[in-house]
Image (spheres, rainbow, N blue to C red):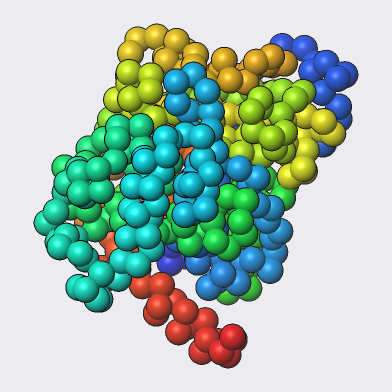
Length: 409
């Protein structure tokens, strides 16, 4: 294996029962083991989001099939409601009173018409200076509407965004609406057979371009000479490289802890109540609804996605840990899922790299956050790309290269 590569990417894989060190065998009611593909860190893809664009431009989509998530819901006062994101849904929603609906509809029309290249659509708002708090005031939106707009449409985890320029928030809401417009039921997609299909798809693409995948290879040492990575040692052999990409678990001395995330995988034999018996959905519990600083997320998938035995559902609850009793923090979410057949609890440290990696050429990703979508992960991918190449990741340039290779669409 003493070969040289330009870049080496390190990754790991584990089965659910090994991960949680469960004794004995699962009950017969769980069906066959091969019927299950449970993601430890489940995330949905925004239909018009960054990851879908990456998959389309790289042609990885030819190796995968997706299914639309059937609904997006928000928690208010102990109940869950469908997230209204179009004018028609806003007027029909039981989440708001009559006058609130009209004000929210006006806000959605403003966002839909907003064009950063056309100042006439700004209506007196400076997108680079006016705070989102002031935009909400302009449209006279109440606290509950602000909660689900910021957390269920713009998908912020905290309320820090309120005092920042409104430009990013408006574009986030536009992304949600554009993604929803693609398929109608929700803005989210999920791969059939689970997220494990993503690395498999990229593995096949990588092989076309001469990449080599080595499975079940324990990493003994990352070899650094004169401050720069030169290779990776495995089972006594060395794969030499000029650059290395890895997650924080491989380089504990090069990362720092910035928090923790709790995730609870729940096996159900029923759909979640008040979701119209959806086979899949997302529920966001805004932090203000449960007196927290960060949101609680629930994502549910099922046998319909070929990830569970027939009639079984997988609901995963996640949030950023804020106290010394994290399981108590997620109780409001677990109550929505009752009865729970079996649950698996994990608490993971959130690590970030200590430096950019430009000197060592070791480029470290951030640990996965509590969100149930890939947008923050894609931001991390683009950041690693910039650190490695020195230039910004450009979707349009990627599209041009694809057209050069495959021809125009």
